[in-house]
Image (cartoon, rainbow, N blue to C red; front, top):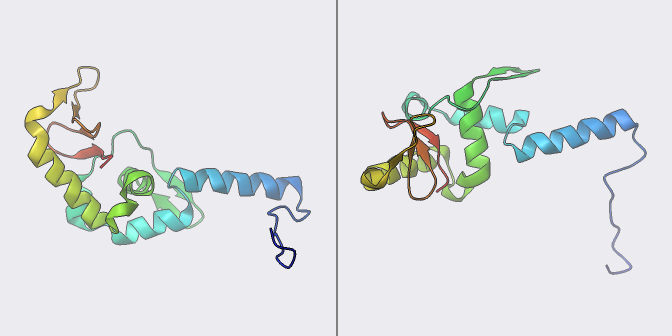
Length: 135
């Protein structure tokens, strides 16, 4: 690092409680479940998008700004993990729906939970709702 630059450390003498809260926040961001992420996803979801996604495998999240349901949490996680390359939740959802249309004949029914497993590892309900899209 050049001598004239200053490196800023995250820790600035905060109390241990504040550091724990910050580490928890970082974990929430990695899971796509920070308040900012959840609010952005909730604002971007249309009724059409909501109908295409499954509530399976996610629980609602209660925040200081209210409750976010399973669909918002599912989409938020998958958009953060795999979907940012699509730019919008609508484009990611369209791509997931198109992928199912193109590869449904290659899907394997998973007997443990009745989900369709597609070649790229994405999961769908037999009716077509997106459980996981890995794009």
